[in-house]
Structures are given as C-alpha cells and as structure tokens.
Length: 310
Image (cartoon, rainbow, N blue to C red; front, side, top):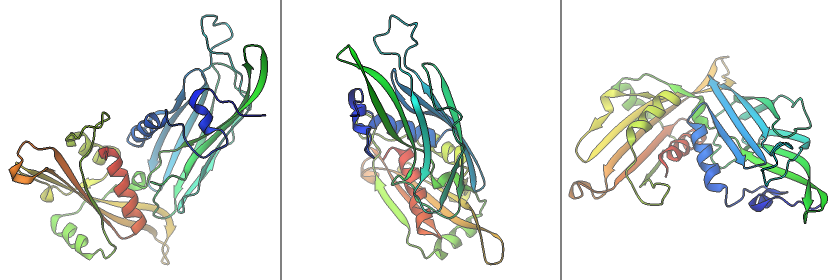
C-alpha cells in the first residue's frame, strides 16, 4: 500500500532522510541529548514520542529507548487527531560506523495502542577510535496503522522512521590528569595531523553571538569528563585559552594483552574578532584537537564543535 504520512513525515517513508520541517528540532534534540543523560529523541504530535536515557562507563554504554504511542485515546472526543493503533511495531538500532558495536534487546510487544509504550535496551561498545559525526548510528522505527482517507474509508499506512542516536566518541573519553610540561611534551610528540578550525558561533536566530563559554567548560569536564590543565588555562582582556586532556577507552587489547587507550588533547581559544582593535567585537573560537588516532581527533573535534553551536 502507498505510504501516506501526515504532513512532512512523508519525507521519511521508505527513505534515509529526515523531514525538513523537523530537522532543526531533531538537531537540537540530538545536541541536547549528547550532552545530557536523558531527554527527547523524537516527537511528532498525536503520533509518536521517543525518549532516550544513556550512560557510559569506560568503553561501554547503555541506552534505554522508550517508544510511546501519543495518539489520542478513543475516549477523547475533543481531539481532532485520530486514535491510532500501531501494528507490527518494530525498532531496530544499528551502527554502520567502524569501531562501534551495538547490541539491542528485542521488543516485547508488536502492537502499541494509544497511550501505550514499549522500551528497549541497547548496549554500545567502543572497539576502536571512531568518528560518527557523519551519521551511521540510528534506530529504525517501523509500524503500520489504519487511517481514514477522505473521512470515510480506512486504509493501511506504513511508517518508517530512521532516527539518529546521539552516540559520539567523546562519550568514551575520560579525563587524564597531566602537568603543564607533560601536556606540552605530549602535544609536540603527536605526529598525526591535528584537526583545527576557527569560527564564529551563531544563535538559533542566525545572528553571530559570543557563546557563554562557562557552561561549555563545565559540560566538557562534568558531562564529558575531560580534564583541564590549569597551568595552561590563560585569560586576558582579548583572549582566553583552555586546555584539556583525556584518554579514549576501547575494548580492544594490545599484543601484550593490555586494554588499548588513545590519548586526546584539546585546546580551545576564545578571542575578540579583530583582536585588540575590537574590544567589543564578536567572540570567535579556535578549536584544536590532537590525538594519536585520526578518527579520534576528528570525532572529538566535531562533537565539541557541535556543542559550540558552530
């Protein structure tokens, strides 16, 4: 049967794409979830809500995904939206990202009535450094309903919703305490090309604006567990510099039987656009990441840049 999704959800049917009208919200949901332990993964009014709770320890993580049918109950005569029953409900988490393994528990139900929910546990394992910034980690939600067409005949409709899961390499990086001289020595010793960019963050309204860096520093050290190097954190009237060190935990073993860990070093500089001539200028950022593995450097770089809103 043809897929007739309501409104812009039709863009999701049978395609690996997201509806344009929901893209800003989905990006914000993903960004917020990446930096917090739980929250909204997806929502479409009067149809489906998906919640996510995730936590990480070492090279492993656990995701709890809750799917809820939020269509109105049959006893809600005031609602203009139809009451829908989800049939043959399926949710399939997957990863096509090399180095990241997903293992999902099966759903215990195949039918979801209005107001009902089902949950699923997903175990994630970091086997080696990876970069998931280009996608490849998602849960495909599929179900069928019967909906009225032109107010009379009920026709079968099939939904297929690929939802990205906000798992990043930064979730598996843990703080590494380093002294100033040790950090500088390691910084110079890394031969893998660094990842660096300079940019001006933008607000949701599209206007360039200096980001409140305080919450970002707390985010990187509290939620993402990077360790600052206080002796290298500097502040002046026109610029500020923060340095961080961490170790990516993996589930792989070295030839000597030891767990493989990958060094990650980060430098974040905030400056006034125009330098000393622009004391009241817009705040810009230079982000530099060095690591012993290129995928690790790129993954950490893009994860931090996402939180900067750049």
